[in-house]
Length: 206
Ligand SMILES: [Mg+2]
Image 1: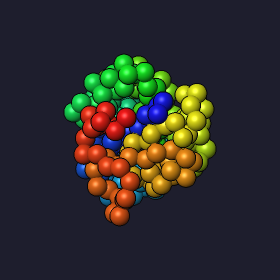
Image 2: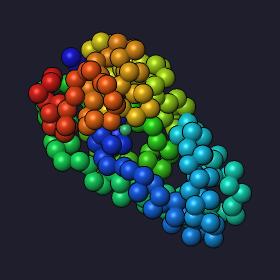
Image 3: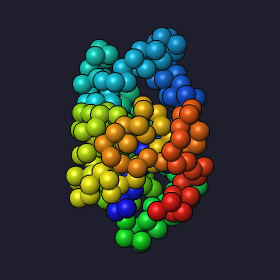
């Protein structure tokens, strides 16, 4: 193995529906909209936000410039708060992988606010390659997004391990391109591949 590539949400950081709802409620209050209605609207816009520029999506909400800016700022603030809390052992594990001569990568489905705040987070500088879906216009489990990460890392898919919680069919997607996939947690029923309960356990598999 030459590289370990990680998913982000629910793999390296916690991100559950509660956090998502806390953001949409705060955003609805900012915009003077109904909370549940705005939550649904925002949720439905996820594929667009995750595969292109945030401004393009925000433009569809038909807001005046000031509100649009404040909404983006709120979104960045939320993202920053989420990314400030890597799960236990994550930072040390990423450093240790590199110390052992492995390359580290990230493939995440996310919107542009994550890219914007990334340099301010504890993750900055820990990965050799980061592939953000919104920046490359592809989502997991598109084979090309895994291939792109491997290409940028300079490794063949067969030389890379993918670690994720399994959302978006990402584990099977990684296997389809020839990577080894490791599930963190128990999110995929019937998963018969390797499994870990916490990120530091990755070190035992390599
Ligand atoms: Mg995930």
